[in-house]
Image (cartoon, rainbow, N blue to C red; front, top):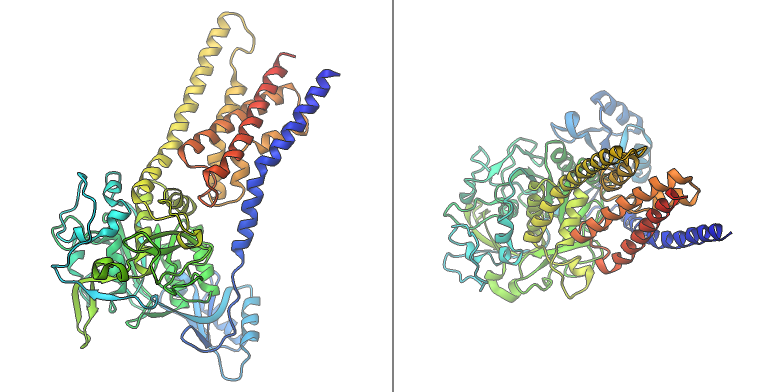
Length: 601
């Protein structure tokens, strides 16, 4: 009677603790459901943001030109491919809406066809408004910065890059400089090479590039005719330690230049959607988009989803409205939205903010530091006569904040961490905490040094756990040999060792299958599954197996918690996470005790 009562009590206690362990899972599901909600496209009227007379269509892979013509005939539209790479690679088509045709009816007809993945009116995206641009003379006084004994590049104007000091670039460079990562800059183009359309900027001589594309002019020469994209690329990977100009934050990574914005700083959603897919299909690890619109676009949303599923981290400028409301594409759930701070670490006066902000990064604030308070990089800018000037310019804007985060994402990739959700998690977990509203600063201010270090630890953790498992089996073998000498039957504790090993390794394997952003990771990283099986009833052998499995998972949880790499991002702080860890640990250890005691029955 006493044994039954004790067993019933253990099960009730396990059920209560399981409920506590499950609470964060339910919380993340609720949050994810909220994030999925995207405001509907506003009534389609032609404006600076929307062209109600133009349609864009994302066809499914494998669509032929004959299919496109057939679809056009079916819906009474003249559909054609958006660029030379559309049919063979990106499957984006467009059409003008004939006068008198009902827009909503046409969109409904397109979306109903099984060959169509998405359809929308054409939206226009722009470089964020009110970004102040100033050419900066060589004798500009640098803002005061803290001196250190770490390696510094020999670029003569590096001292003016207060922004790199803020994100602890020199400490990060002790771990990595970005080698092996590819960052796609989707912008006005980059002054990447001497071509028939432009020249290579003076401080990009050592910068490495991979082939890109010009989706505005539909050719393979994505030169910059505006200046914005080159400045953005400079923050990421301007040539460094070359005795010229300034430095780049991840200067050993490679830049993929993709031109989607014209010389006026404006571009269409169909071109941007194509560029996102093109980048994902051509090896980009990170995409930076310092552009925006107040309205979502169906094709761009699907393109961001596609790129993330292919393993690309998408970093975007939150916008320069100076008020609440993150622009698109930053507001998409698959993107990492970056707000801007000035030299004092406070939110820049122009920065947009909102619940989607993941973290903040230096974007400059000239109200507080003059030209020295902006972000200094080399770029090419047209003068009043249209001639391109190759100089050093101080910009300010969330456009400048975003490439800082994209560069640190490249540093993380170079350490072997390539999953977009893990990259975002590392960026947030390592951010410098700020005493300010979360919707303005997100998890805090970008910290390149801590991010690079955590990425290094993350990559090494899996190897370390494999060594631990190898040691467990070596111990199993030694125990078995010892027991055999004493005549013990079933001398090798094989099942217990295997269960313990599974508990240590399976959560990471499941995360790699599900993606580290999946809400199921909370379940697979906890003892919910073995404890639930135990509550359903188990014999003595199963109790022992589940007990050791839960013990391994508990050790796994403790390992991750101590390393700051738990399956929850910075959205839930460590203080809130502690009860979850404690509940899982108590259940896991309780199961182990129950299993070992069952062995003595």
